[in-house]
Length: 309
Picture (tube, rainbow, N blue to C red):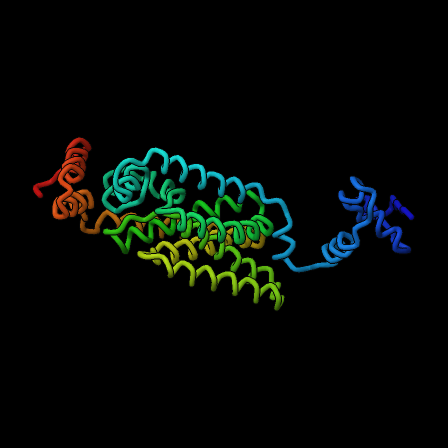
């Protein structure tokens, strides 16, 4: 029986179920329409879906176009890099946008973004994409899409800047810093929404624990980028919540963020320069790979990176 009450707010449409036949009509499954056969499992599944209040399960079922698009970009970039790769892997990553302190202070500022889409190997890529699929769908479910993009990219950039502040030697690549920003946004949502449901908390904690343990398996994990991304995601997401309650505090936080970024950049440029190209050229020459070492030296001179060494 259908009821439509004009006096209800927003013209809410109500479907009333009096018996099982009404339920079957409401939750008809494509399988039944194609074959004419009933599938009991479909009715039970849809009943559970409607009555379920768990945010994680609802987020996993919802279509998440931004998360899928970011995953697709990471996979396509990795495949393209694999196809054109013709020299040593570490050198290839630097040439294609990997983040290093040396390149950043020499004007390659774009690397704080490009490095988010680059991965060392297929295992690194698969692990990050699996975790991005989970946490990305959750954050895209809980936040508007433009806020999701701000959290992911600005949080990832903050993570990279903090990494450059404390590590002027390593090459940093991978989406894990931006993924940690999504985790930070989840934590902010828990605090500001006040929805401390036991099942949601347990599932979220287990997911974060698995991500951290899994990250520790890989060699040379950039913990600075992870911590920075977590901080950045929490800070950006908190700004969105604060804006709803008090715009003045939002502007204070925005000013504070600008100050923090300014201090990070000042510290990055004040750190002692580590000539990573000299390091790898020397390593090749010691290993007897003269042609590879000479090629790096030539590139170093062509780009104006040469020094006395």
